[in-house]
Length: 120
Length: 473
Image (cartoon, rainbow over all chains, first blue to last red; front, side, top):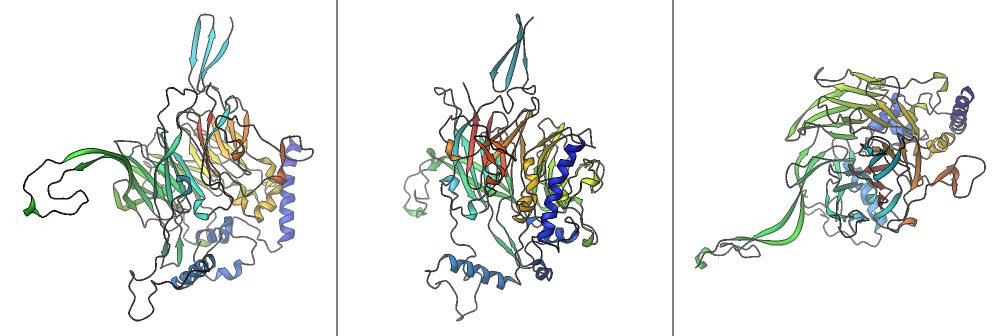
């Protein structure tokens, strides 16, 4: 059973060695507080984000979405929308400055909601 | 004296010797994961490979009778299927599940204060036990829990005096005679309406909801806190667990799942990213930061590697129906714990041990962080969980046998028996085996559900829902 256990350890240790060879800057403690912090702060802008890119992966696999503010967020969404629909004309609902916009004037964050394909 | 073992149905065993016979209740080795022959029944969802993100299934749950099956997806939508009444003529198959209701449960939001996008993805659905004609379920995204009422309408009133049939009001001066409005039958309409919205109680992302056996309260858990709600009250909730350290630099673990005990309304458990489970008793104190029991399997420190903590993180915890046991799922295994024994699990089942030698690449492609769920069958004799390549695994606790099956459209003729699959870890690959390097890690089965009473299972691939049932002779 001792050799069995050793066989159990060896693959994991070998994998660890592989990982350290690829990413020498990898921290000692994967469960350490900075990894967990990134998980908790999914979606929040903070200065840690600039050093984050040098790490191979975020904590617990969280891809963090960082926006400076809501304007930044809306710009990012608009860019994505333009990528998806290159032929879309100018949005007729956009208010262009002849009066102060109200929440009702602004375009919806998400366009018409489609029924799930499971129900199709 | 001789024994004759007969199987009456998938869930009963009759032992006969001479003129005497006894029936065993389903808990005793009755047609476990491998004596059962699983057959394809139905598949729901689009066939095309190009999966829209909104169509990714994020939760699957049968209701208490098993008649309804709910799914939630990344687009915030809920689809509920209903089992058809059993066809008395076609006794060889059980009722099919067809769409009963579908609605948009949650919508994307933007937290302006924190510049944080709030995903509409449905993390969990939990059904309430049925109390009247309507059905109720709780659905939650990262921040908000909603109580939905699903009701049927098959009659409508006609013959109002002051309203036309299309709803316009009539001028009262034109009314010369009176009539009594009557209810007339109409096509069945299933309506879903949000009855309660439980919002603003979670700073971190909700991972679990669990309804108490008192049917009046429920808990919701995020990464660091667990709250207790009353189903009728939306403007406040009690915080019952708070593991946020005073100094966030000292954070070492987060809550990964939580569940109420099925029978004891004062007991709940929560699991952590470090592989521990804490059982708490709400009678002990208002804030259950101190556990009543701590379940943890000791680890040999010489075995530790960079991956040890990540793969020990528990992704799901489920009580058995009996309430005596609980099951946990970590990255490579399923463990059954006896609530009376804290120092180690009573059973451990390896789901895909061959992945241990692939941890480096699984870390690089993020798969090591995948959160697999697990479930019990109705009699607590078999447990099931998902894996990669659209494989899912079942472990029979009595016979100790296990089986690997695949959710694939290749076998989609109804009543086709599924062929067991085998993964070849290394060396010579036998015919019909698949090698570890050929596994598709994008095809993951994270969510599975087992009908509470029958051998019917719902297995969710990325965007399809498969329903399998046992072969009924």
